[in-house]
Length: 190
Length: 177
Image (cartoon, rainbow over all chains, first blue to last red; front, side, top):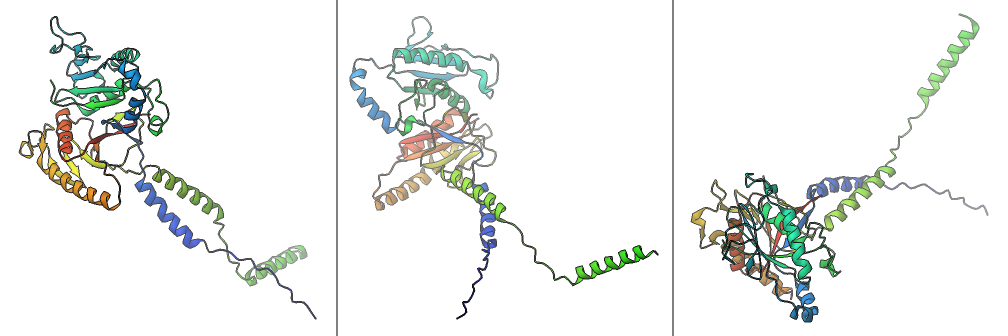
């Protein structure tokens, strides 16, 4: 009996519908995409910080609270720790109007965000961090017309501009470069 | 005309005739490589889209502050605060004065009335949803501000959100570098 010979037919997949869908997906995804990388600054203390605080409870008991406060004024930063203002006028511990750190650019308008001496503020924060290694919280307040960008840059300087906290938020160790990275925003102070 | 030239012309005509009689071949477009590129592009875009669960689309003319912070944006309710107004749920609910302060008729003792009403409504909905899903409700608000936003406005917005039972705040920033 003669054997039938089968010849393999080459079947080509019709990719056109798939291509149509994909070409529609590309602009849709591009539209939804963020071109600038967004990040956030948590103003309230995160939950893991509380756990870390419990862990170091004994260490903290031995340490006096720092209560670091930074007040952003039109003419500079006023820094106070443990109720004592740095660079206060004679006889005044808390009510001094004099800035602890003056402006980096004298006479620059408020919209010039580089008018403040962030490097000196960061250096001061580093000094406090060496004395109080377990402290992470800083209270920030400002005069009414201080722009938000200045507040953010103040927070960056106090946290340490090299501080990368994203991994620590996932449970890793807090990097040594991070200083006071838990800001509390306080309003109404003057 | 020489015999060689005649022979050449005859051959040329034969070739032309053969070309004319040849059935038209169906041209196949090789789209496999194109498919590869498109597939890779779609996967890349989907991945980058999926890595950011919260999509912040700033309002027109808004300049989000720049920062060295790198913490990702956590799930929360965004409020867009610019020097021209406060936008919540795609609706402009509060207007500002030309100086960038909140319209005095809309704020009383730091409480921004229209914003509080909207937030209270939103909190009720979010709490009910969390109850149905047996999940704890985390009152987190994402403040999407503007570089020039005044600190006094920021404090008023934070006070209002606090009164509306939000206890956690995040400032949305653009990562530097």
